[in-house]
Length: 270
Image 1 (cartoon, rainbow, N blue to C red):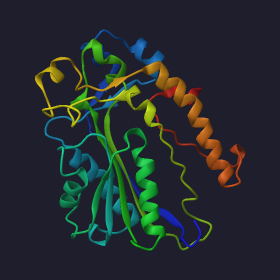
Image 2 (cartoon, helix red, strand yellow):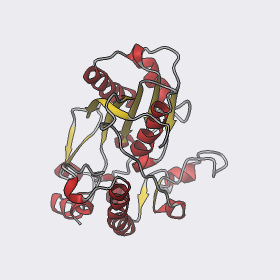
Image 3 (cartoon, rainbow, N blue to C red):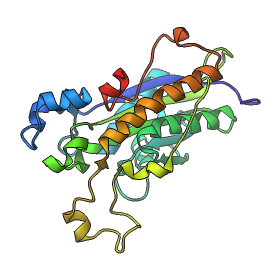
Image 4 (cartoon, rainbow, N blue to C red):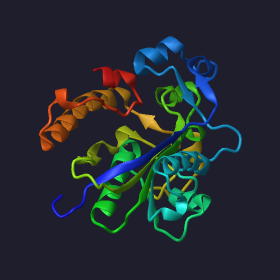
């Protein structure tokens, strides 16, 4: 990005709610077992929010840790970006509730909904804000609260055994070191496969927005064509890794640590 200044992550934070749900717990609600889940996903346990914990609470805890690591306060922020597919309300977006909880000034707060790739998209948008000189400090948060939107019957087990609740946050700022910072981002989408992993409703595709039929038919729960998603991810992940390495004139041997989206351990193993 010629003319852009280098951007780096100056603080990170994460949070998961304390409640742990094991595979044995899942087996009490649906026809499944610890062996079945581990064979297909590698997942052993997940964290779910309990009681009155909200997505704002989860995002706030991660954000505070990122701010503490960066040694700045909320008053020093210039913008907030929240990536999430689990809205607290249909509108306004999650970011404004996080902004209010942090007690910042009237800085911009925006949501970015790109599902599993949301945090990467948000990280890139935040980097462009800082890299262009428009903002000095941007908080980027990825937060999800899947547990309240899962079909906990056998019908929904292919999806429900995978997902949990949690948040990660990073604070972006200009880098004083030309050799230190975010090197590049490589974003892609294939809209033709949008219904391979989706929540069909409620939504503006229906009149009215939410109907009894939608609820009773189970179309309000996430659905996934698991085999297709698995095979597609196994092909696409190496492709985009190669793209990123080539763009930065690096080889696999130059990399000290790989951090992968971990919804399914088996994908990473392949």
